[in-house]
View 1 (cartoon, rainbow, N blue to C red):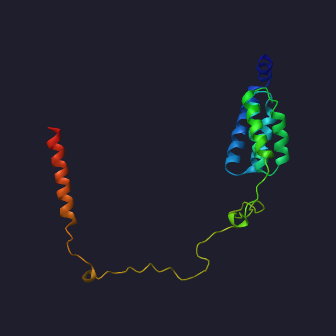
View 2: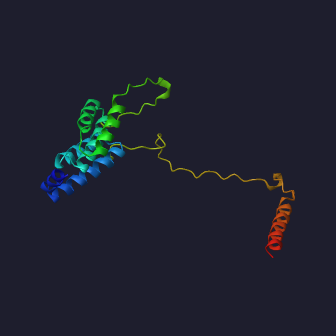
View 3: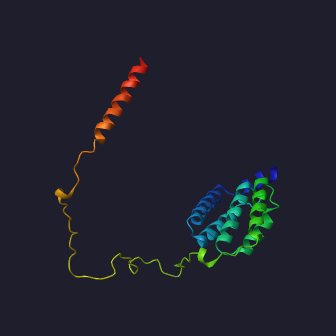
Length: 183
């Protein structure tokens, strides 16, 4: 325990804050599907921390998850094998669970169960070049407002079906019985 405290004291408070910031950015990137960014941020955070601390182990667990999400399964497995010997019990326990999941055999799924998502990572992030429009035909004429349909009131059934009267009587009886029983 003393060794961990001494190691944590050796890490400057400035680099600790930078590491925590990078750790949070990495978690947000991972949760939003930006796996390469997550790996980059978590690797930088891990480099700034002492690996045998609780925070260092937590960052490395997230890094292993980011490795798997980014398609670097072997790196994730290797990191989990290291973390299984981590001095913090929760970290080593989580590493064993994650290692078990990563080593599990992959199940084959039928093709019709899958939806292919295109990879847009190669596209530049230039919104000026990419425009999505609902109407693909270009027209120089101004759009006409939609036509309003008029309903012929002589065709509408306006016969009283006595529903309102029945509902009012039921409400009155309910209120009357509530008042009667509350006295």
